[in-house]
Length: 235
Image (cartoon, one colour):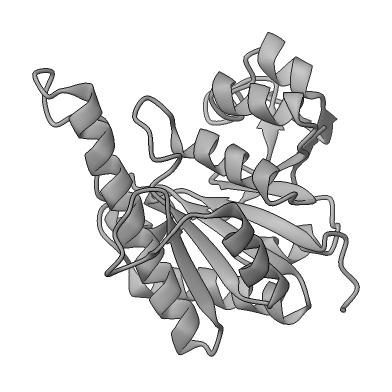
């Protein structure tokens, strides 16, 4: 194995990140840049699990009259589309992938079974988890936190468009300060906007470390795995 800090990771990517400047849909160039770095990490001997959101296709409800459960189900399907896109891009690069879905869609993905996921990881396959937890009312962050805990990931890598956790919004305040390290309790008590409270509490209760970093440069995926200090560690 190459000189890496983490042997098994869970990488969370937002759906919006796959859209690039288009803001909606999928930008092939952006996807390929991201997947090339995911494959690079896997080629270093790291076991890689990925959770991707669906915000580039669907977010919230189309109207205030739409049933919340229906809207959440549609969001789950959006994550499946993104998972299949990532899988396809990775396979074109020569990687071996498996898409595991929390919602049964046997013609397109394997049903999520924890032991099956673990076996795929042990065999060096990149596992892409789709459809969140399979339940409405839970965010993709919560699904990612759950999968990170279930597979025993050494780190839950949350890729965002901001380079870490700040004491206040860096897009609004020029004097915002980035933390190098914070605790789970600080994230929750100070409402630091790392992720929703359910996901943060799940990580805290199961001692799952989180690393928040920017995906603006996909090379950062490799940097985090190597242990470079480019974001914020939550532990």
